[in-house]
Image (tube, rainbow, N blue to C red; front, side, top):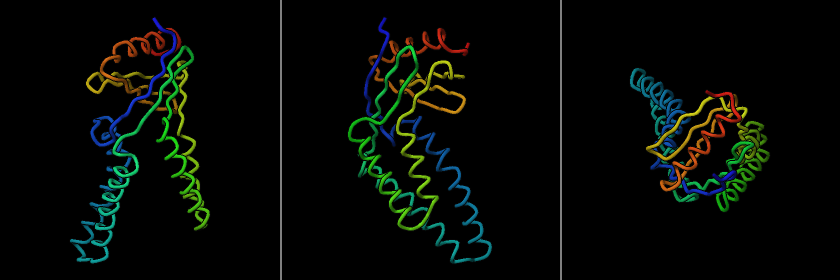
Length: 186
């Protein structure tokens, strides 16, 4: 059995159930609550301003969708390295460069508008372009065989390891063996 695996994979953003579920939790749930609140307020109080808020949020959802389709062509390319130390996941090639440029642009606009929040968001996004998860920090493992992915949770890190159909079994078994050998997960 190999001791190191390294590969890149293109993961569709809008056609992968795992990615869609994560987007729904991170973005859909909070904005749905705001939309419900604004819609309720608009209906009960007959408030035109609340309807503007609803339309604005829906327009931003649509523009974000178009932006992701245009800039990333609806998918992201991830690069993984798995060895006896742990797993490294990072954006690969052109996607890494796009992310870097978008983060720099966001930080520039935050500086230009004197918004420390926007600058902080840009710095956090830039800092999460590469994720390292050592085996000893893995606390939970879940396999998603239908999507050919393995979900790993650390104390402060959450990582999805996407593989191709052809090598899912081999890489999944390697991850399991490393978990049994180096981690405290049973």
